[in-house]
Length: 217
Ligand SMILES: [Fe+2]
Ligand SMILES: [Fe+2]
Image (cartoon, rainbow, N blue to C red; front, side, top):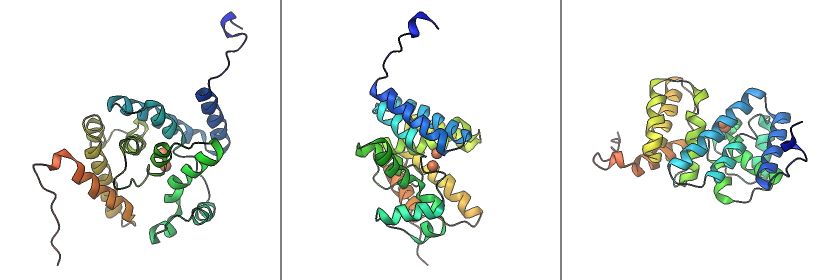
């Protein structure tokens, strides 16, 4: 043992909490998912730094975003009902979508997180939410564009936009997901459509090009 590692340095509260979370993840999610989570943590920190946001909050939300990823649908529904979450028909058909909101509940209950921005960023990581703050945008984007998601040209384009404008990157990410759902005949969650419209209107790319409103027939 090297001289400088003994006696062991006491862990700071942030290090202690991270170690606790890593131990919990080792018990509750597969190793491959933990790798994704660590990439999201890192990417969220990078984006937070680039956008002058709180890097520690971004890291914490990134580390905690998928706590409930492997909860069974029955458990997700039970917890959502207990928390009085408003459930749509799409949530009932696909309870997995609730893992974001439930992860925020676990973060509070299991790890004592009380910061509302961090809890919201965890809860918003899958579907977003109209009006969400920039920390939520960062975690939503980090989850979608972390390096493990591949190198599709559309994804590479979004990665570049992430640095320039968070809102534009959010609507592009929503469009990518929604296009995939349309192409595969899958259900769309109304919250993602609302997130997409909000982010589109927030995006400066739209200032010279007013959002088109589809004609009603
Ligand atoms: Fe997730
Ligand atoms: Fe994730």
